[in-house]
Image (cartoon, helix red, strand yellow):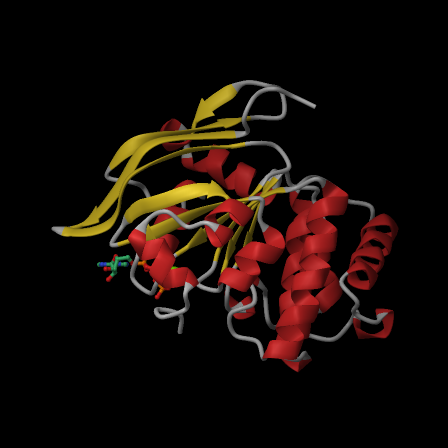
Length: 258
Ligand SMILES: Nc1ncnc2c1ncn2[C@@H]1O[C@H](COP(=O)(O)OP(=O)(O)OP(=O)(O)O)[C@@H](O)[C@H]1O
Ligand SMILES: [Mg+2]
């Protein structure tokens, strides 16, 4: 265990012209901790996640990440190449739409193997064995390994996207509505699977969702956003059972839930 956070975010803001994407967001994320970011449509969840994962550059503020060697790095001062390396190795990004996170016209096995090759593994037999192992961990039959994801169901695609992201042993995974496009029974199974993997691997994750049940199931801590601002944050059970901000009270009483 370590007594230092993994990620430190301070006064992060992103404006699109005069429109607020997110404003003045600060928090620390600890190793192995899952943070849920909840709020209604347009509240700035995706903007925040994209800034944190450096897919988008903020207008102001800082975010520092503790690398594997213990060194703190300021994310927005890193070179493009360094950021890309982090994205391929130490981080994962699970998109709501699996097509955004997969290569749809190469095999399932290659989708997983590609990330391993990106971190320098060149041994075909070992890559394939690891791919098989990861497919089974996300409950995809080995005999589907040569199929392209476009031949998969939505739930299978999402599980494949998860395998592709986790195969390199990331320490931090960003997820934007990971169960968003799926029907309810598939969602429940995927959430179970995700929860198991996150726990087994001791992953830290930032999960964007508008679904409070997802936050309850996956996260230890949550942040509630409205109009680009964090209106409440705290331990997930506390926020959901004893919401303090009027907006969170409305959200929890389901008046605003969609
Ligand atoms: N590329 C963009 N250009 C201009 N404004 C944008 C852009 N992306 C987002 N916004 C605005 O920033 C605000 C926050 O949007 P964001 O997509 O972060 O919300 P969200 O909480 O992820 O919503 P949803 O739940 O619908 O995905 C909104 O007012 C949105 O219109
Ligand atoms: Mg969004």
